[in-house]
Length: 247
Ligand SMILES: Nc1ncnc2c1ncn2[C@@H]1O[C@H](COP(=O)(O)OP(=O)(O)OP(=O)(O)O)[C@@H](O)[C@H]1O
Ligand SMILES: [Mg+2]
Image (cartoon, rainbow, N blue to C red; front, side):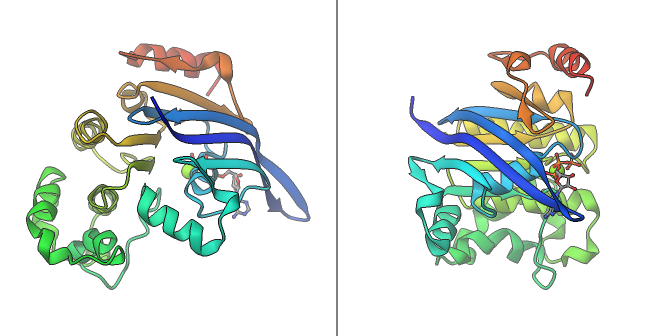
């Protein structure tokens, strides 16, 4: 099977006061195409920082990200932007919806950015909104939505673009257990039926149990011994791994 994503010895330093603090310290892993990988770790352990680097939204202090065979550091700003547009669907932890666009327009944005016409894919858009339970909110503006609704809009936006890799930063963080399970089934289906690759960050062991593999990020490094592999990762195994790592 081919590799969707390679991460080689990634470092990221962030400024804190006068110092530069290492957030990621030599993170390496691979994700195969059509694999569903989950990353867990304490708050502040660098999960969102990692996803930003993987998408090319931010640049590493050292190390390399290879996205579908192409090293992001070999691309200029424009090359990275295009690579992200065509290669990555992103569910942001804090949604990043466009405040002046309606829900439908926000969801259709990746189609418009890629030069298409969202109205030509209205049926697909409506179907996705229905699956996510936001079909009655399509005309609303983001500030009129609840946190959970905003989250589901950002998930729809990431799914509709059709990019092969989905990076999802705590996509169920604001959802009820039922709505969260529906989102996880949608993501699992995107892998099993849609042939997509998913990298999911979550604090929720129930979500992690949907993955093929669970990685644990602790103090800026992956805890190699703790890694869980499927098929069939059990929620109890995720709880046990988190307890062992004192997360
Ligand atoms: N742009 C930045 N400048 C300075 N420090 C930053 C920046 N972004 C993140 N940090 C710091 O880097 C660390 C990791 O942040 P990050 O958002 O990646 O954590 P996280 O694992 O996603 O946490 P959470 O589970 O709370 O979302 C934190 O200490 C944070 O304060
Ligand atoms: Mg985060």
